[in-house]
Image (cartoon, rainbow, N blue to C red; front, side, top):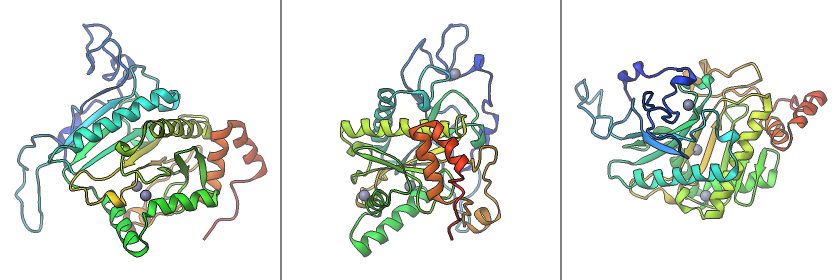
Length: 330
Ligand SMILES: [Zn+2]
Ligand SMILES: [Zn+2]
Ligand SMILES: [Zn+2]
């Protein structure tokens, strides 16, 4: 997607000029014309996808096919408090966010020109955040984007071979193995995936086969909120500062319903930190060959995250005993 107009967007304004804070004085309006609010959703002022896109600047050809960038970009402001992110929220507040995600998925997904509703959050300057006020985004795409597409195709092959949903199989395997589990409750599991790309990558998956948030019962939505609260707390305790990450939510495409059987609701957290002070950069193997190299064993990072979720002090004890530096696995 090309969006050259976005170069001029607001970049890390000081807090007194935060466009996502409520409008407290009429002389200083922000993007949100209310003195207080719980959660606010509005269309991005610098969208990559637009409802009525202009014709592309360049001609379409067989070698270089082009299409207008039709779709919707929304911003979700998590609260009217400049410092209240998911990590600081209690479970009912996060549950309200889950309700908003479900509502936007339903409404945007119902549009004929939307094939995929993607909920995500970029947190921290390490992943390029341009506004500090806690917020997430939603992109409604005209097609299924490449990563979900690849997942769905893989899941379809697994379904044809084994007759089961690959995500359901993964959840069962992780619960049985236990070594990569970070946290768990009645309805959701948080774990470091077997083939983690990032050292502290966490996937949050529903125990039950639910294609999207719309398939969850109210208690299940509450369980998701509670597990997210635990994961957030663990992330922020791990190094003692707010963990930067990209959060990606994968749900069923909203095109023709063909993917329901292989769509299994999950969230993927990919934090760029590989240590407290070092970031993982995508370099030769990742960018040039598409092959990720992870310098840690998921079983070890899962143990550290599990300890951080339970109690921050356990992380220090792991450091002292040298756990987390076990033999590297092939
Ligand atoms: Zn703010
Ligand atoms: Zn499933
Ligand atoms: Zn996924």
